[in-house]
Image (cartoon, rainbow, N blue to C red; front, side, top):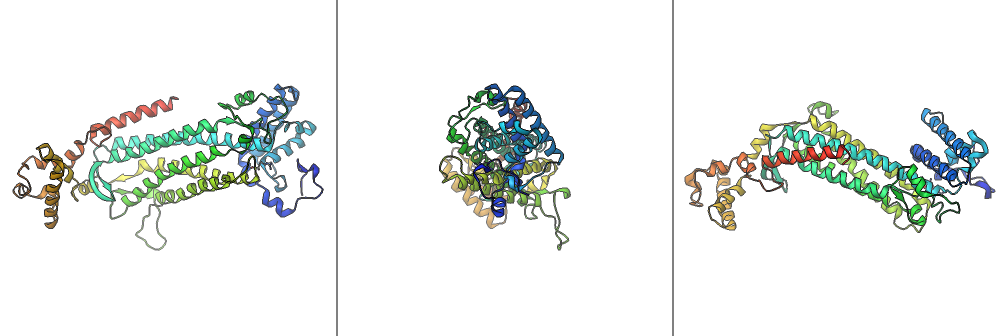
Length: 465
Ligand code: ARG
């Protein structure tokens, strides 16, 4: 049964049923109900404050809106495609509850500024939640780094063994990435948290609405400065999605490493059974599905960003219905990134790293070759020359299936007489790691200091900066 539409005064014909279904967004934007109602209550109060409606009218609008909210939350509320979107659903139910006074609510407002407001309120809430969840994840990373300070692991470039590092150093690299993600989301909040109501359809309104008053009721930092921009701006959503995409790059890289490390080829870590799944045909299998899915879901978030950019790229000002397509990608990206952050925060403490396997890997593949060259530099050999000497020593060792530390001093001295007995100490994994003391390097003193700084940073963030 078609409902009366708030806008149907000039229409002589009923909307085609297929058009109704095609234009309806209620199944998606119904998730904005709480934000829509909060915005409407603030608008009603602003109308009363401006003397456009009586205070008692604002009070009954507020009461009615709260009732609608309760009906939605208890599941009594009826949805209907002919009412298009959440804004019209709420308004229409409000007039059933309140009668004529309900029709005053939309004074000086359009769905164009209303939906912009709802999206901003929604994204503000979700961005704050994501920041808090990322803070938790960073804490988990710091704790895991702290608990593995005596684990060494090969560091790679080009996926070839390069130099050994502390596992904690490797984990703290992800701490840095997720810290930058938090900063980016916080920065995005400055542009999300701006209030568009009062812009009405596109040109502003004839009613003397105090927009700063509305902003303060809803906790906004400020108001939008141009009514046309306000109703057609989705930069804040694009920016959020760009930030979310970068964050997902980090999750995807981390996932890739966890997948590689849990393979039999690496076997640096064991995925606990509770975080893995089996194969329906191969009885021996234990698959790292969680990081695989996170890596896969990265594609969805990138897709959302591209969808949003493409929706917006040719729109003339101001509002165009194309913009209704902004919500599915935005909501999906928000849900996806939240699920990934939560999953990682739960999984990381459960990872079982194989200390011996990682340490043995550090001793195979000449990860200490740079250190032999550095040793020679300290004995006065210019670096390029030292590089050549060690390169030849590596070739010699390779031919014999040995490592540098397995070549006798006599044989080593064929490459340079600057090499002495103490070279063997310089080539140990512990020594190689501990000598890298430049700021940001992997020496354990540095990593311990980095963990300390992270604790302080997280503490400052949780006490509100
Ligand atoms: N459902 C619409 C959206 O999400 C609300 C705004 C509709 N405005 C309009 N003039 N038809 O964009």
